[in-house]
Image 1 (cartoon, rainbow over the protein chains, first blue to last red):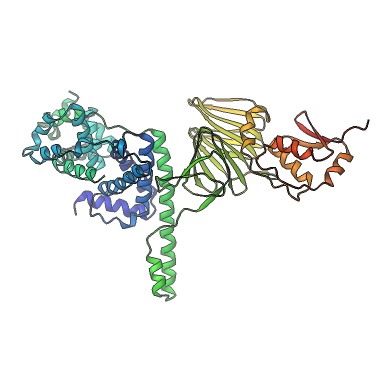
Image 2 (image 1 turned 90 degrees about the vertical axis):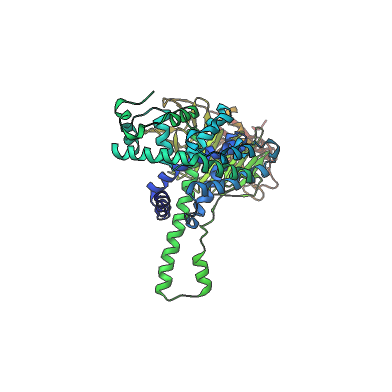
Length: 204
Length: 338
């Protein structure tokens, strides 16, 4: 079991034990990502996204004891969310309004599969700026919460390592190390998580 | 480029041009609206507390069972059942006029707000543009104006996210009552009987019809509003207090949603007390003879569907008694002899 998985299982155990700080860490770490997962699948309907995410997290609380860490916690939440999206669309008869995400397309899957040197990001050349931006944000959401945040703070907001360390409550060296791991995870995730996301969406 | 010179020297900022460009192209990830986050957090937190509480109850029960040597298979199956306590019934719908819909916390399926339906903790209620609904939470009558969204958080707590709520803790109730109304600006608790909470574009407005309410601002600080007071808490936290009439057209929507009062075989004074309460006016008798006359009358029939003032007129029309509004009172009298 890798370190991230162990941390996620520990978080779940603390939540089941009733630790308020664990609930806060869980909600702060996953709510926004789950909302961003849901909203493009619901035609950018913010009210629908609110309902679906609330239903997802409510069900996740009820099944928390069943979480065994076989998948990442966020992947597990996305699996529940996918079913909620289907239920919502069915209940509201909105199949015709469904948005087909670019991650759904065979073209993208093929493009991702063909990447031999993902660090060069050649896939970027085949997509519009908006599509690429959304895919990158999707990848960031698939990383452990602190990785995605650290990369965004560093490369999008331009924060220094010192500032990131302060935001995460860790020292300078630890922040440097975390950024290095985050960068590597991001590089690897460009291929693997894009593939996972495409599979997820197709099932919806 | 954003990096400081110190950053450029550390290994994290090595040859990152491609990474840097890609992430900057993506831009920041969107944050959900704060009010959405707060609402969902409250609902999920309530569910989490239930799950934790159910587990702890089961664990205690398991320890007792082991200690007592109770190993019956059926009991074991029950103990191992991982499902938490289901949501509890916290309210029921008394009246619905072109009402709206209700959705439970764990579902996206909406059901119609129909009279008689039970409502559970976590349920979210929304009324239509032409609708309204009256629900009962224990002793409390809760009326939702049109275009109103509320969530029933517990038996003693609701959250309003749009529209207006009217709270009536009932006849004969005095002193503090535990119902809490959560608004974006803070929490309203009533120390008396009747008030309205309405969310406006500019903030939250509280109109106190009877008794007193206490408003606890999300930013800290408490204000108490007396009967006949309107408190407006603006979005920047500024509070305005002014006089408001306790009866009149502003309260018509409340009367439209009044729960039916069963008059059949009830003494007239009971009905008069109810009507006075609903109209927020004291009922007095003009003469001892009028009071004696009222005490001897027992009612028959129904006032279903009538507003309180229409019901008062309809009921008194079947008696010799008359009513006159005077100085905030309803004066019940007998016709003067000619």
